[in-house]
Length: 188
Image 1 (cartoon, one colour):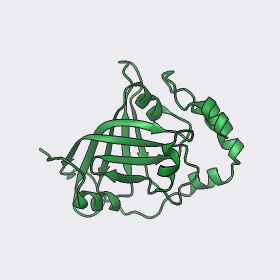
Image 2 (tube, rainbow, N blue to C red):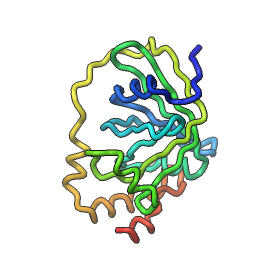
Image 3 (tube, one colour):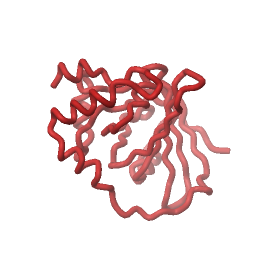
């Protein structure tokens, strides 16, 4: 049985900073809706406070996390050690998307250097922090970040990125609202 923590202290933050990959899971309220679990990397996770974290969402073809958070806010972020001592941390909480038209967007952008074409941020107010042993997690050696997403973003103009997001990120697989595409258009 794992331990519960009241906040992210310096030791936990140092551990988080060493991890190269994290996973985000959300679900809609509907019993037959699609549960979403997404791997994230690219140094995209930041501790904002003892009970708050955020990540830069570069985006892609889906918008499930944003849609689920707009519907119900439930989210868990999991990190596990792939090298060094085995350990898993889960951060359960209430999340919210921060889109480019939101006042907080620029403040968050300043905390993430070298991130290509940030689509939105996900901010999580943590309700529970739990660890577990991680004994079943295999040991992997980190080689490098993939350049694919950065290259894809670098080869798009701002208008092309906007068109892509309007076309693919307005509605989730289950028909829930995703990005506010009208606000995206108005702010560009």
